[in-house]
Length: 266
Image (cartoon, rainbow, N blue to C red):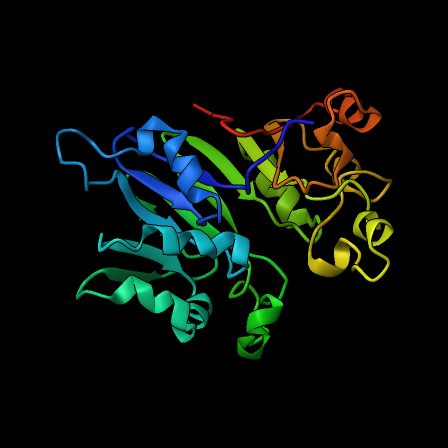
């Protein structure tokens, strides 16, 4: 199987200013691997084309990469008030405020659109709670701990949902209105982790709808036919990572793709 880095996305409307969607622990290597995210010769070696980071939650695999962007460069972080509160309470993230005006927060709210240059981003609330390390801050308010995102520009729409606890009629309608959907593909089956470690939780218990089965993502979204359909956020236990596996063949036969490092959508 081909090794994968942690899930990380970036978008741009002009190819010059880029916005990260979350900040993975592998962010340094992902920046190095994509020349669009390198400093511009026109603006100096300490410049960056990264204009902001949109956080969909406070899981460690969504926020640890922020600490790799701490070298005095100004950062703009888009996050809910709850996620902001979690990060500001953690002494590690004081590294982001070593100099005045190093960090700017833009608080975002469920179902309230905001602009990323020419792209309209709409946060969509997901059920779910904060990760265990921050559970004391959890308010239980929908969409404060976990978000999906819809991006719109020039009449095109993309849905980005690397975490998806369930498929509702609302999500089906949104997906059908999109040109491409990037959907949670963390696990193939509900008991995938539990079969590996007997004390591990089931997929649905930690907010991930599995791909396979009669009540999995492929079955529940079979009536969604308009967009290009792509699974992202693949766990290393998921058999779809093996392109010779029956599970991978099933995904492809159902009209889905499995994203890999460097996957692009223009």
